Length: 160
Length: 160
DNA sequence: TATTGTTATACTCTATAACTATA
DNA sequence: TATAGTTATAGAGTATAACAATA
Image (cartoon, rainbow over all chains, first blue to last red; front, top):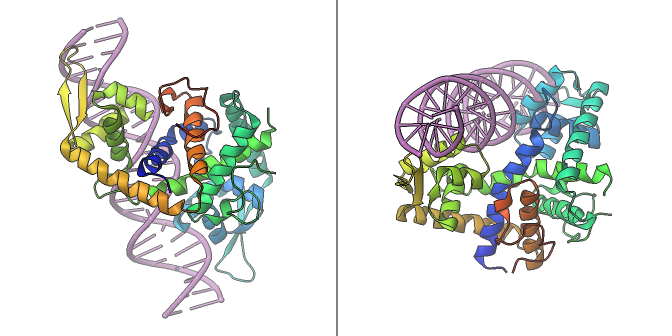
């Protein structure tokens, strides 16, 4: 158990990480704010899903999810079909245009990160990724782990 | 140099870290939003400073800083005096009430972190802290390093 | 003329609550 | 009655631009 000051320092680092996120967000394509990017990323990774599942993965309220999805649907990047087994539900799926948009935004963020982190060792990049994933997991967002393995097992090793 | 996918994964983890920050923000005292907490934390750590310096440390525009400082000044947590050497500038300083507020919010965030991270090793907590600090540093926020040493020197070792 | 700081405006993200449709 | 999703509203954060005062 660390002294309080160490947790305070981590809290401060977390609070200040916004500057990094803003820098990253600035690279996003036109008409594609952060919320839209998050939706496309999850749909691209996990495939089609219901709104409720998407809200869970985004870790935001469903009303927020609904707005984000409406934004990307308006631009033709996803479509929403009704779930035949439960007409209250809607299935969200990325479209080919959405895939193109996703590819573009993924590449630009990766490029910026690669540039900013050019002095980093591969291992440090991997460790940071794993530790943030674990942090999210410890905060109750159990879908954050990199692979669907036991959330508490990975420590500071690089992802496979 | 890592493959693009690794940077994409880090970008995604960063984008999803908002849920952690929101959880942390929920523990803040009444009338003390995240922006106010950041101002108090920096003034408590570095002592009195000019608005421009504060904006630099916060890594946000000065207009944003001005709003945050106005909020905490309205509550008596900081005072703003004119700089005698340059009447355009204002010196911001935390008040005793501000110190009390800062103590309260530091303790509550540290407590939440200690609880959420109770399964973590001391070393992992320290590593995450250092890596985020280095990340901010690599993104051009050079005041983010834990100690005033060379920003690129620390790697994945725990802070001293 | 340049710089420090404030204010007005606008945009994004978020949550709560009220509402519709379906189970 | 309970659940899935949408919409309205409000609060917080941010940036840009126009402005005031001083250098």
